[in-house]
Length: 255
Ligand code: KIV
Ligand code: NA
Image 1 (cartoon, rainbow, N blue to C red):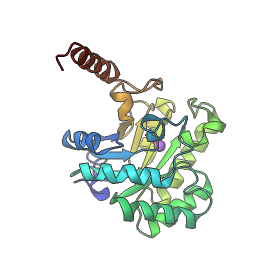
Image 2 (image 1 turned 60 degrees about the vertical axis):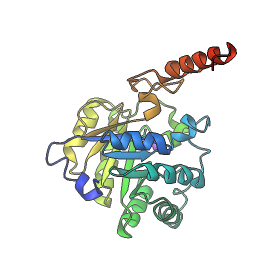
Image 3 (image 1 turned 90 degrees about the vertical axis):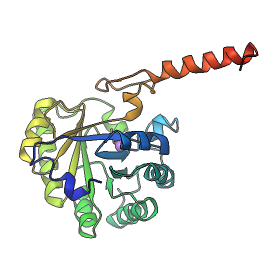
Image 4 (image 1 turned 30 degrees about the vertical axis):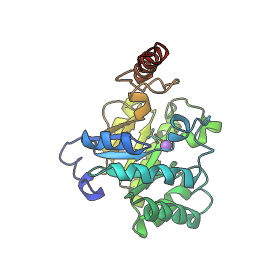
C-alpha cells in the first residue's frame, strides 16, 4: 500500500501518480483493485452523491460517513479525505480538530484542504507538525465558488505569481502533494518543475506529476461535467438502458 513516504518516491523516479475520487465501498473497491495509487474522498461527493448545488453545504460528519465506507473497500491505495468548507478555515485549532477526527474515525492517512494564503499555510504547517499529512489544493478551489465561479485560474500575470508563491509556501509548510485545478498547462508545468513534492493535476495539462479526476465524471454519471473532465464511459446511459430492460421484463411478466 503506498504510504505518503512511498508516494513521494514517484516523482524522483519519473513515475506518475494515478488518483481518483471515491464516495462509497463499491467504487473504492473497484478503484483499489484496478491499482489506483491515491483515492480521494473529495468533497465533490456533495454534488455527485448527495445532490447538493455545490460543495459548501457538506458537513464533516457527512464526509466521515462516506470515508469510512471507502476505507472498508481499500486494501492498497492511500486514502486522502477533503476537509469540508468551514471545518478548517476559522482557526488552526478547528482544523486540527477536524483533521484529527477524520484520521481517528475513518482510518484515512491524510487530509486535503483548499487555499494557499498565509493563514492556510500556517494551518498546514501546524497539521504537519502534529503528524497529519496534508495535501494542498490551489487554482480553482470550489469552496470559493461564490468568489471565483468555476473559471480557469492563473490567467493574469499577478494571479500566476500568486499561485506559484502559494505552491512554494505549501511545500515549505510540509504539504506532501498539491492538487492544481483548472489552471493553464504551462503554469502547472512550471509549478511542477519548481517543487520537489508532486503536483496532481485536474484540468491543468499533462505536465503534472500525477492526475486526478472525479470518478463520477470519468464514468459519465454526472449531468454537468466540467470542460476538462473526460468521460471514459457513459454509465448514465448504460444504467438507464438496464433499468428499461428490467422494467420491460417485469411489465411483460417475464421478470
Ligand atoms: O473534491 C474533489 O473531487 C476534488 C478533486 C477535484 C481534486 O477536490
Ligand atoms: Na474537493
